[in-house]
Length: 387
Image: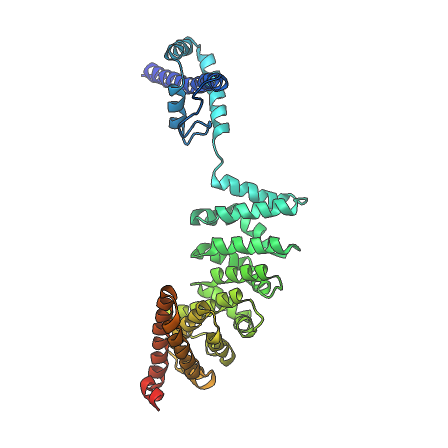
């Protein structure tokens, strides 16, 4: 029985070595022949085929190419030579071929992540260009959730969070971007980042005078606390409501940052709707914050208008009537809605077809908000308009 197994093992080893050796030999011979052909004058020297540049999508593609570019007689001769090799020669040749095949293999995502993390962690003299390159590579690699979940296992989270303290704003921006990308819809990673204390630093970045740093900081904050109650509690404890209010109420704030901020307010209100057993966050009834949201509806940017209306709609759906009363009595929501109605009416009459459709959708949203605020407070919007 033992001899039979040994014989089978020997046969398998021989077969594997034969195949690998043939593949390598075919490739080398065919390449050499092809080079001779390519370098000889010919009236029709154009090449065809997806692998004519020497690149192969798989070993099968490599083998097919090699067979197609080889002399059958030489193949038979090479096969006979392999069969005459001794056991030691076979083993040596097999090791050499395996080593060569390993060199041809692409590194895995985990290996690429480990290299990028190592560059950031261990190379103190790393240039800014190489630092940015490593962070860009991680930005691409962490998009799949299984790769993102490997970040902490590889020691990458601590390293990336440490980059938030770098003196270069582009480095801080890229680090925040990586954290935001990795945290999207990923509760496991959200909690790991929160436990490592990154949220306060990211919130501080939102106040940066460098616009892209502020934008990516808010992007990361949103990704960290979305659908994460622990993250939202920490955000409130770190005066997140005041941070958003400052962005929304400051007329000099870049509109992209305002869009992200008002969207986050709406997202936090929606999260409260999905967790009805939890107390409503106090800042969602803040007069100053809600007033700043309503004021955004005067913007000529229809996208910003839409985001503001969606946020107001989410706030109106909260079980408390306090926010609705504040929106109407303090923030002048009725006046704002009527102003939007007239603006959209004019736009619908004069706009091109695509913009007209968008304006009609926006008017539908405005009507829903108007009906909700009056329903919440027991008034009829149509009667109010007639009066």
